[in-house]
Length: 126
Image (cartoon, rainbow, N blue to C red; front, top):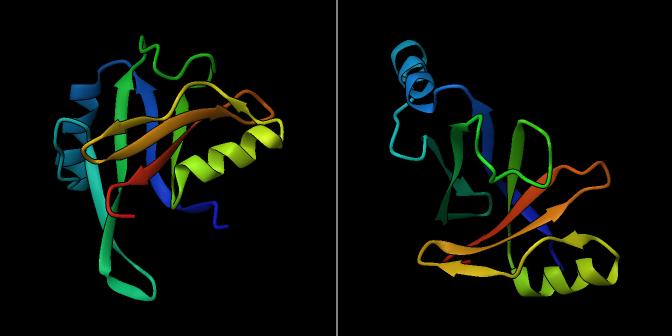
């Protein structure tokens, strides 16, 4: 079973997300939407299968990264979230919540051995 298939997103805390998005847009040319910047890519070996990696600033007051105390969270794409979560639970990995489904994919959060919160994402269509 494949586990992680790619980097889905890089999320980090900052004092003013809108200001930081504007700085990156002005000085580095990142094209922003409400969530941040999307870096589009094609799957190796299947150029018709497209995806993206999201770069997204969050308020430094966000509670979304909890229980981790870190200022960042990494999102990884996966192929079969239900099967992976079952395996991770068998392996003793801390799974923080239940799988949630949205129109753009399924999500769940886990902790690594140092307490870093990780978001796992199965994009729709995968």
